[in-house]
Amino acid sequence: MRKIYSIFTIMILNSVLYAQAPQQFSYQAVIRGSSNEILINKSVGMRLTIIKDSIKGKSIYSETQATTTNANGLIEIKVGGGVNLLGDFTSIDWSKGPYFLKTETDTKGGTNYDLTITSQLLSVPFALHAENGISRVSYTGDSLILSNGKSIQIPGISLSNHKPTSGFGPNISDIDGNTYKTVYIGTQQWMAENLKVSKYNDGTTIPNVIDNAQWSNLTTGAWSYYNNDIVNNLKYGKLYNWYVTNGNRNVCPTGWHVPTNDEWKILTNYLGGDTIAGGKMKEVGTTNWNSPNTDATNSSLFSAIPGGLRSIFGSFADNLKNGFWWSSNESSQNSAWFRILESSDSKLTINNNDKTNGFSVRCIID
Image (spheres, rainbow, N blue to C red):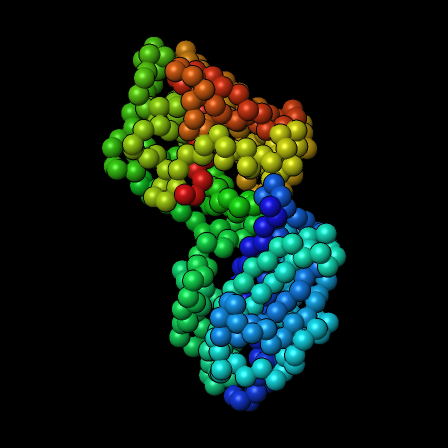
């Protein structure tokens, strides 16, 4: 089933008079296909209907519009500016609500509308905008925040669940005070840097194991710097065995977790599949990657750099050449799934190996 996700609907006043109705308002939504993929640069046909009193109330206005999704699968249209089918948009008395907006969508660009969503509109913003000169609107949680300091609750709509599909997000911090950039990639939000923390989220210290023989025999969580050199921590983060990622003590910041194998697959598919996803994830250039750093564009802003690995024997390898990142899923009693990026190709490769290996960790939001 194809899906449409409304991001928000904000009334835009085209008159400075309190009593006059808006001439149109903007509507934005992200359009997805049958496999939950974002539909990019696709023609979309829409029928939009204003309904009075309830979701099943009387239709008082209707129009059609044709539009195209952008590079993020987003559409933005002005309701009130389409081809009129029913009623007079400018004659609607918004103080007599409640009103609802029903959107019907044909993701092939025609008029065979097979996707419908209905959400409530509020007339309150019109009066506030005209009366108080609102110049900007933002959101936090389930409230619209107006530039005059007032807020508006939106019943039944959680704006906090609607995130961008690309670009950097807010920074986060771990229990040690390390700060990390974050990035939105499709439906997910990832850390854009490798984990550096030395404690679980409950404050329990994760052992720093230097001795090779001790490392080889571990069945509990541990970490090391690459080559046991603290200089490598700032750039590449720490190398963790798989046992750190598993269990009741979360190693990621509050509200984040080590990605599952399925979450890695979602990222891979969103970036076009395993043969090209790696190029979109790798930091550009050869400062932190060996030449040739094939097809590296970092178009996803994941900003992957190759922290190398610590093997099951305790030896170190592949810094500047390959990056390895754990998933939280085991593949057998002694092995677990992980991902590999290489300097010599554009793939994001899935593999499994012994849980005693030391790999990098990236966290994903809950």
